[in-house]
Image (cartoon, rainbow, N blue to C red; front, side, top):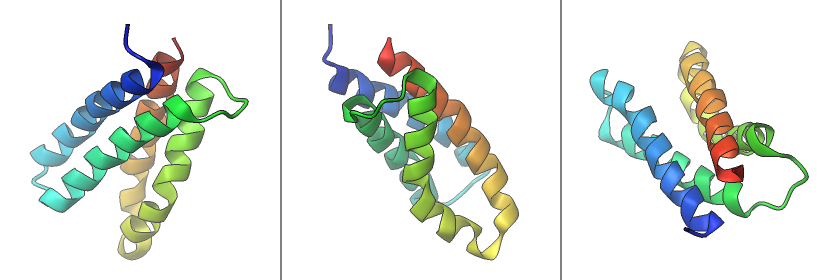
Amino acid sequence: MKSKTQKGIALGVLAGIIDVIPMALQNLSWDANLSAFAHWVVAGFVISVADIKLKGAVKGVSLSLLLLMPVAVLIGWQEPMTLIPVLAMTVILGSLLGHFIDK
């Protein structure tokens, strides 16, 4: 069995791939795709090592949203409506990451 950290990173890679697929289909720039992928790898790591008193999906959503905040400023500065799908994916993938890392 993998360590919790290895599990978090592996699941973060999977979440990154899931997030980047629709972005690639929309022909978004490589830097946007790379940024989204890196976000999920880091989120998986942080969720797996963070020692906060939240469990599973709540921990995943909370930490994923916190990690998104600096990038959300850049994403939403010119076009705030583009944040809606980003926030939706963050809630969905963050809750799944937290749930499966905790299992």
